[in-house]
Picture 1: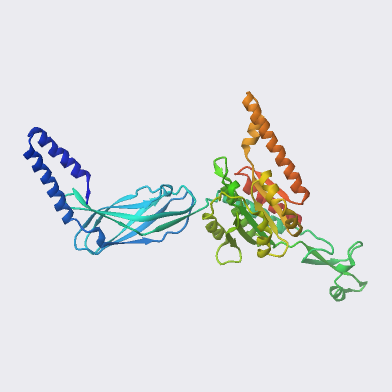
Picture 2 (picture 1 turned 90 degrees about the vertical axis):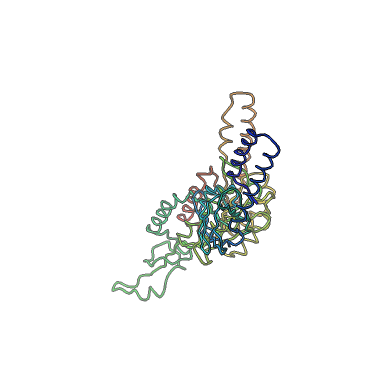
Length: 435
């Protein structure tokens, strides 16, 4: 049995009577009246157990966008069901009206919509629905908890989508320009032209030369080649302990997701085959362009369930994971932290083997706080902090040079600039024929 505010107000009113007419008899009479009214109200209330609760599946939504969680109530009892329904969403779901009035006649159904404004990426859960039925006097009622689960998937926000049209336009401009011709090299046939001094004799097309005859004699014809435009792009996102650090109030993992989504959409728009996976001690999620459905939607869907794991990343498994995806030369983009300690012990030992078979790009989030602290020297404390920041910057620069000596491209930028700069690096590699 549950009691309402109306019962409380009635109790206070009868308390005034007890004060005005003090005595044991008055007190017992008022208490008996209260209990009797509450009991009658409970007996006349519709049974909340006679209502069945059905969850209506909801589509995934991006972080920051509002959505609605719907629940269907079907009342099979003989009495009117009047009361409230409370949906048990977790606080990060941002339920605006978790408690909804309910008024159902016998044999009727009712749909209850709960407005949500999620504040966290991932799977949000409502494990139960509490249904309270109140009697006709509104003094007391009955309450039942229905264990019916509802899951709302919240995808990464993909704020960097605004850069996608301009980057795709640059790719189209590249395709419209004259292809870079490489004599006697390349894999993708471009065109035929007349032989000129200095051409590789292995590029002569003898069949085309035989077909092209003139009154002045025979002209040699050579094939021209251009770098392949449709290649494989592999994106590896580090979800280990370093990805949990917050840079400008955004987890490093979320910044990596933004960069991965923009690069994946751009590469897929260029016709490249894209593979994405996240890893820590092992493979945690995976999406690829060869699977059914839209690649961008697949990547966002698998990213929704990825959270930072407080363990060290096992980079030794990275070559095997890449080899399982493709044995051909690919663009391998590793989004991780440019931290000297974790890289020297984990990634650097496996980079030579990766750089020998693939074009490797290391993308990392740069903390602007280091630059700000290195320039502030107003107090003795600021000087010590500036020295520590300078040392961290020097270590990073040393690491960048070491990576460059291995043939690894390094892209380091603040959270909001990392996605477009990584996309620009991809376009530059595409235009130069290295990809």
